[in-house]
Length: 394
Image 1 (cartoon, one colour):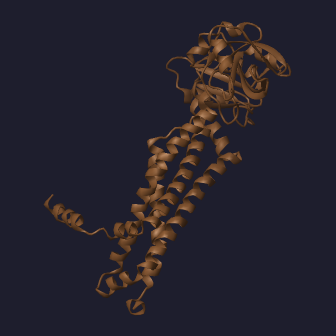
Image 2: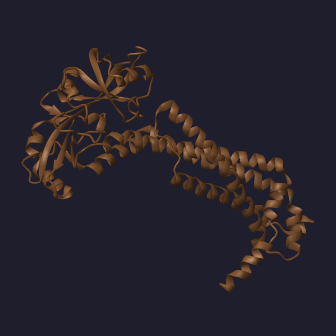
Image 3: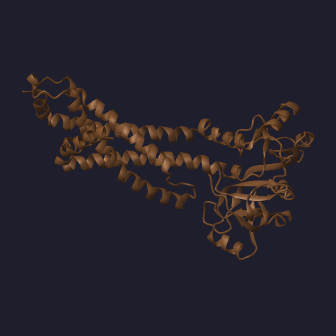
């Protein structure tokens, strides 16, 4: 303990040359802080949108009341599931440990907004109302309603102008709308939220789904939801199902089904690449800005550095001054960057209904990227200082 006291006292008495050099030219320092904050905001927004992409497109997956999921091998994601024979569900019921196997239908449909009369894209989900498919209390409370012909439930967190429609439904008033040129009744509300794939969700029974999409073959389904007997091991039953069922279906656990959706958006679409590219661009922009500031600062104080060298100070000490400046800039730039990002997250969330929230993990990640960014800039800026000869400087 006593051995640490002396170094700490020395550090406390040390003159902060890095801070003095930065604060000497306040205009330059403010420009540098603004540039770093801009780079941080860019990284925050790209990481936020990327997280919102995965979260919004898997919220429905998360709410599924299922242990295993059957999908077609060529399925791409939730809205592009293809279809497989319904008899695979009956075959799955023969496997020990399987309690039930129910169909799930999912498709994007054209919905005409009851208020604006404009057409938008909503995801229509159909399931057997006698066996609840989702852990959504509002949906499960209205299972009897969606058994009625042409009756659906509406996602109150949908993206669009639906305030009047939602208010009428909440008051128990009848609301009629048009889906795929068919008039339907909206009898209840639930909350999931908009995603990058659709502006919202409609839920209904499997029979109503088949009425909305008459071209859907009743002998085929988009997905199968398998619930297991209490105590059954999902992984063991999954292996048995893989061996028992024909190769025209894939058997996934619920977690694998969620990862399957995330993988599609991350690897098979341009949007996942764009967000990663945006983060990289923000990082590079920050490196360039900080390098310009530090390089100019080193050039402006080359005489002072030459004096230090002539006095016997080693390069390590001089490099420490530049790296100190880099770390100070990284912290000063991060603080306004995270503050502005908070505001932009809130603004974007209100405008798009996407789950865009600041998280501690993301803030730490951007702070670390910020420190690395400024450290790289400092390392590049010190090359001229390391090669300098005091005799040449004077």
